[in-house]
Image (tube, rainbow, N blue to C red; front, side, top):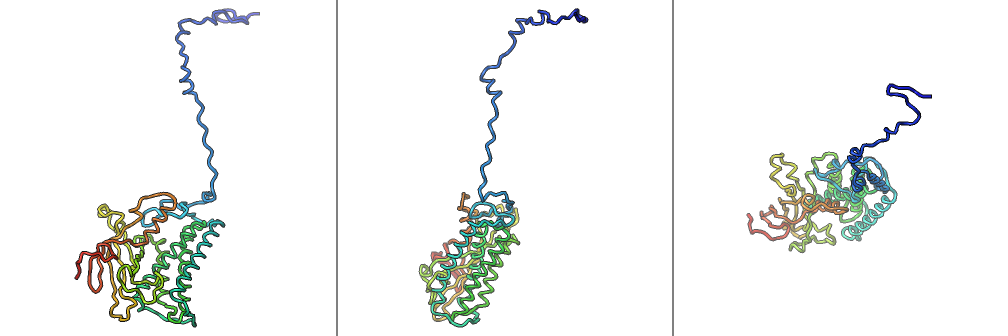
Length: 355
């Protein structure tokens, strides 16, 4: 049987002409070079597996890096991780931080007991000491409460507490510690619970919390500067047995971030690492004659160490952040019974200029 078509009959076998290949066409076929073929058809590299997440990297929402700042520059935690937006407590870090706080509390208690409370136990009483140490101790209470709040808050962040909660509870715990000290003073016969000290404590902890919620306050940083008064040729306070009580050697500061406070056009000409600070210091506290005591107000250049020191890794950035609450020697104008310019306050190296 055959099938007919327009071109003729079609049988079950194809005509021999169907398999004919023109030699000219065969010569024109290009066989790809073996190297090119491997290049063009290599199988894509496999996608590496995502590493297992550590406990610190759990998928809890964290504060954005753009929001975790102080005075417009990045903030850092001790662990290097951004804090959680909500609290997710981690038992092991919480236990470690708790142990460190207990140890620090015991050490500070012993320091203060030796300085003020030794052989002083008596009935609790209230006795304000506003005139004591020309109020430089009030500045010390403010700074001490502020720093206690900061350090406790930083520890709480490592336990998985949220940024907001760590700030508030850090301030509360800082004030609680200072309140404990004040209550102990209330049982000391020569001291007493001082309302003005307690007010300064409250202001320090409150200012720490306020900086979190009112960012413009972050441009005004409390700082402390201490050089043993013996090094400065000053008379130390008569009962001083610890640096905490060496008021003649301490200056307390409020450092202003001028760069941030200036209008944008002017800020371009002011270095971000250079601040201006106002400080308060005393001389002669502890001398028998009150007329020998002197208040000193200081205006000085200051260094923003977060801007000045290099960025790094690990705990270094956190340490740099904390060091910025310590005032380093710098040129200063000291206004007291006389006015003097110091090249490197608080050291006595000066230009001799005074009036």
